Length: 179
Image (cartoon, rainbow, N blue to C red; front, side):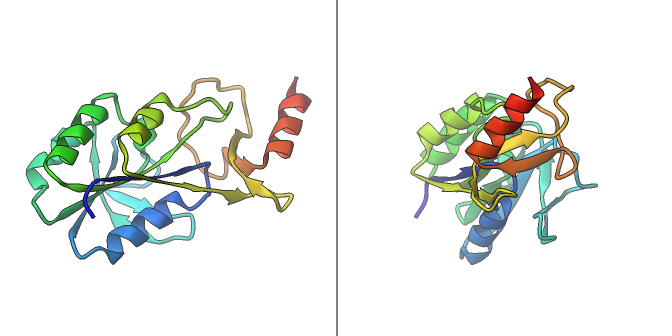
């Protein structure tokens, strides 16, 4: 089925793993992209937290790779929340020309505020999968908590050294303890 599928959730919930799985199981030719701002891996690599790696193209705008898309392409987009607003225009175009797109991205930031671009992407999608991580207490986690909140910008690229996945109770307790 062509169209736009979104995989979303908190950090460490398996979004990239699910994206890789869907790309690998497709009969179409995968093309994987990530935003230029995501510099956690050297070069054009995306890796899951379990260590699986795939080659990707780092781009500022989806339109930068339009010349690589054919009728048999399945486009995978990782860390979609970091793309500029032009991603909406580009996704509409891809949907209109019947390209299958699978998108992985965070739904909320470290303060539990929505990434507005993800809300817009979800509104364009044909299917949404919401994934959850496991909190340290064992409950289902749906919050991405920034361990050091001295840096207050919405975007801080990081991994387990910077963030942890928490359930609502643990998240609220940490928020309460810092005030």
